[in-house]
Length: 235
Ligand SMILES: Cc1cc2nc3c(=O)[nH]c(=O)nc-3n(C[C@H](O)[C@H](O)[C@H](O)COP(=O)(O)OP(=O)(O)OC[C@H]3O[C@@H](n4cnc5c(N)ncnc54)[C@H](O)[C@@H]3O)c2cc1C
Image (cartoon, rainbow, N blue to C red; front, side):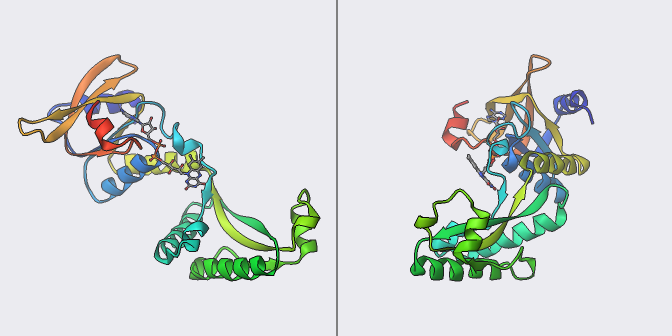
């Protein structure tokens, strides 16, 4: 469906959506797909282009969160490595396995990182991307040629995922649209509609192309802008 048709659809009254999502980055698009797949009616509004903000500027890693493991948050890491594996299985055209080498500085480092990263890999179970292992100093230098040989003792190899973040978001958006979501870019939310009790009942949107404001009613308004709720409420 073309943008113009989406905008016309959004303007049709009465147009009460189950969810109005503000922001078309990874978060908003993900919510749009989840809600549409569960049969809810969804309107998603993005003030710029989809995923143009933070969602196109990441390191593009589908990681399980090694640092969360260091913090002892095993449940979170288990969930993340399983999701990582599923993403690599479901979207092979925009994901790949990426190897990493952590140089070590002494025996303590070698033991710590070998055990830690082996555990990280084991948490993925059948969705493992490859075995973590200790590398000799020579093998580490073969892989990281610019590192100062006098400063390292060896290295530890492990695997994570890498993905095309913008393309994944656009593919996800396409799936949401196929399931009935109405989405529009260059359509900023410039205010919230409220009833006499102050309950949010919808949004006031501005169509950048048509240079026109219009209202959309919704049962739930979801802030997926990355901006704190208070700032959004002041719009
Ligand atoms: C340097 C860096 C590296 C990162 N590396 C990784 C990584 O390797 N792997 C990973 O998984 N994550 C990574 N992240 C995190 C990831 O990028 C973010 O978690 C994710 O992009 C957040 O998406 P979002 O949709 O919440 O925010 P955004 O992408 O910022 O989307 C918010 C959207 O809301 C829109 N918006 C704002 N106000 C309005 C309004 N009034 N009306 C309509 N629309 C509005 C904006 O235009 C924007 O498009 C990284 C982040 C950074 C900064």
